Length: 291
Image (cartoon, rainbow, N blue to C red; front, side):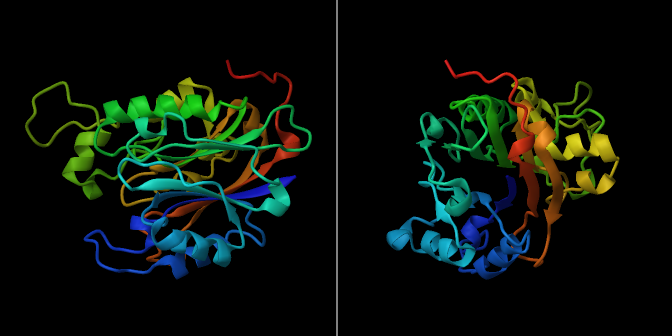
């Protein structure tokens, strides 16, 4: 079974600007998501702000416009939560939705799993949004996310705004000229020498490295290593590829078709991502259960 999965940071829910002024960008966002394929099967969202208000009015609007169903919204201490939308006709009903320990992450975490024909354990999805304020805190959040992604077995997709540089040491450097000082402070290692500008900046790859440490694979980098297509490594926001898709090791052979979604322009301050997952190509040689 071939699945098309879309990942998108909505930017303040797609309903406001950064100062809280009304700014309904949902029509552009829904156009972007629907443009990813003739049939989009899974949508992993972050910055899902205020979608629960007025009887989940915006969530219902999104389900209508995308013709999808939704798992329960993840809990969020910040109000900038995550959401998982899915095509029930393809994936069936979700079998488990687990927000346990979700509020240990600033923006929240929840894992949702589905029974897929041919897989000895469920296929799980966990939308990500790590705190941008502290790489040390995000490192802890990354380990929570990695662990919770495995709650129902070895087949997991983690994706969203990780807020930190990709794990590969040879990945292209961020565009430091476009990086705000507060992002420099969060996304780069503290220089070892004199703290006088210009600083000798080095990307802090520990957060995404923790995902790799837990056995997950960066889809864009995985496909780049096969094709050497530099377009796979292009930034998804102003200065770096901070929106990422990570899959557990057994899913790596099953991924293809990764691309950025940047139209319509202005839908969000983050590009979307789309990729394909062939569930028949997932490596099922070593299934195991969480314990």
